[in-house]
Image (tube, rainbow, N blue to C red; front, top):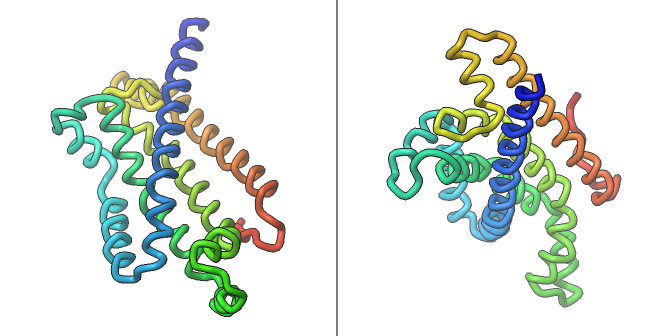
Length: 211
């Protein structure tokens, strides 16, 4: 029992580290890209098209492609790259849409007050877009939690290993334990991020979530 608990904790810590690394890299890459394409519709159509195409690729297929690349191979590098690419669509599109839905009259009023584009972005567009951007981050984290389990097929020792080993051994309890733990972690992340959003985003700006 103790040995099993130790293995599960080891898998869970690896699962957490993969998710945190993927989300951190995604924040650095995709938020600036979302801001950039909000200022160029031609570039936006190209980037969003690429993001949607990547998102439609089956996760196991994408992981498998990266494994064949010599400098990636099995394990963390391929897993991390796949999760970062999957995060592109929800994160970029929410940043883009969040900025685009800001009332143009507010922006024109800011220009009339002598504010330049950088100041408008920093003081008006980003604060007003924050709820939609935060929704994209929450979607990304929950999605990454689930997709990270697929990385077990390419050598990542995370909670997905419980599912893959359970399938190999026809061990239903092992499969269920892996699936339930991953689902609970996703729910935990969503609730924690929801609490952070409630603290940081003014009540009048919050995005209503369907129940």
